[in-house]
Length: 339
Image 1: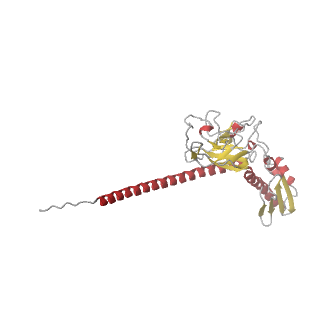
Image 2: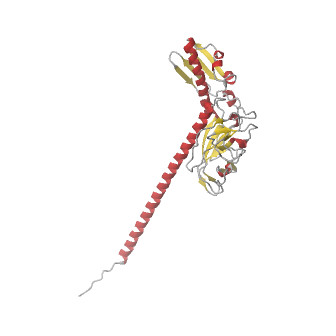
Image 3: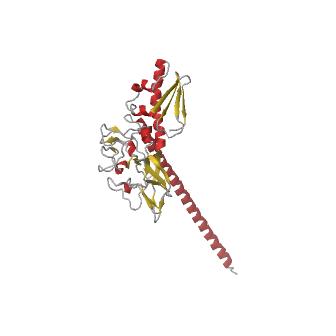
């Protein structure tokens, strides 16, 4: 019997080896592609969580300021570690307001240390790393030496000093008239240690160097102010802070809506009783909240155009043309321009 041995040619062997290598490369590339896709998808979801937390914090701060019954626009101090902890209380201060008092975690419980003790922002939004949002605001919006809020009206808010600054990752100034800044600190970076009961701000918030300038989001005394940039971890920068901020003009526009709303309620009640709007603002000042007179009285320009139509505008509004007009016959409120 003749036995036949099959012989695989060298060319066939080389082809099989090449095919196997190709399969390995394809599988490897597929794995890397899927891994990168999963990583990208995970990062997208994390970004959404952090963005939602910042947005929630923004509305909480604005809501607090606008609903403030003592002084609309006034804010609670942040939760600092000067008392040895981050307990959720805003740490009120009645002395001179220095930069270090303006930065801390978003307070969710009470503003403690001032009389009367009042509720703080009543929310605890967490970023994707499970960290509380940090909060800094202009000293123009905090209580001062007496424990009372400063005068906060459209005229006072047009002051050019004591606002916060925010720049982008190229060092370009975005605004030097910022009412408040919110920062999501993200995960711990190399050099940060959050293991103690009350780590300093530098263990949460980051620095960022652009050319010869180093921004320090943890240092309120740094004249460069805050910086918002893409996440990076290289030889120059380790940075993963996410920022959201509200400018003075946006803050003032929302505040004007609150004040105008109070005036409208009183005007409506007056018209319902008398059948006409008052001739002068002084006719209804006694019915407005205590915080209105004398500060907002001085800043509010009131004109009765007809028995059923009035218009108001506020001194200091930066818009060239700004007025709110009410028409009793149509129950219409018309707003022209911005403040």
